[in-house]
Length: 309
Ligand code: NAD
Ligand code: MLT
Figure 1 (cartoon, rainbow, N blue to C red):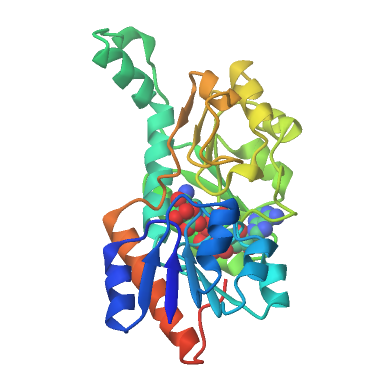
Figure 2 (cartoon, rainbow, N blue to C red):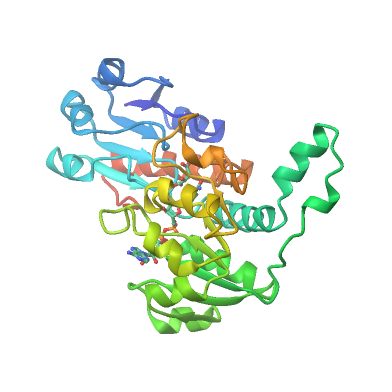
């Protein structure tokens, strides 16, 4: 079977696919006609977040059995078109959860203590000690929007660091929140109470733009951390809110369009710290998701159940 890989995955996944006897081809950074040509005779397509798997891809790939997402979010795959063309969509929902949670914690501390800003100035030769008076996470309230796999791991870690936890997630039980020591509250209450608000929802029509000017005003201070999906937070509204002092700062790993444009307003505001979608970028996480998706491709070819997104 031909397995086409259009976003780089860990070698362990490539090896597993080759050991299973598949013809593994890579075509990175292709889009448009080049992507349609590359996928034409593929039986499986493996992507991360870089490849947009549109209806045109499914139309061009008449032998496609499965699209495997080496990661969690499947917002770059047209699921309706996949269903229409009878193609399985599978993801790797477990392998990078801890990495994403750790990055969220790191970004929270980095924003609270202005670590990137102070680092940059010291590297330029400036000893700006008196310019940075940070905030402790201990004793503050963490608002979690989306208490799923990553949200729960963030909750455990920041509970352990002395934060009070509130969460908004209309799809989980109070018992699950209780077990984590988090109080389940309405969205507005979560925004109002949070000193740090961390977003962990998927990007769906319901969550797109769910945090904009009005929601940031309800926070009325504190920090917003987004290591989930860019479109959930309105970027112009966030840049304006931090620039105007409505919020103290923000830490952003994900963008509505990636790679983010150098003209993005988020890059212009000093108190917004950014990373280029690094949440899942650890060796362990990349090996986990690559081998998991390789196993699922094998399962799909064998007609066995796969872990659907
Ligand atoms: P998950 O499906 O386990 O959890 C998502 C949670 O969001 C669920 O509990 C769901 O009930 C909740 N939710 C859905 N709609 C909501 C809404 N309107 N309001 C509030 N809550 C809502 O997903 P996960 O594995 O925890 O991943 C969370 C997000 O993090 C996803 O967007 C994923 O793509 C992203 N992610 C990013 C990175 C990264 O590299 N930055 C790494 C891993 C995951
Ligand atoms: C995910 O959804 O798994 C992450 O965003 C990480 C990635 O893009 O690989």
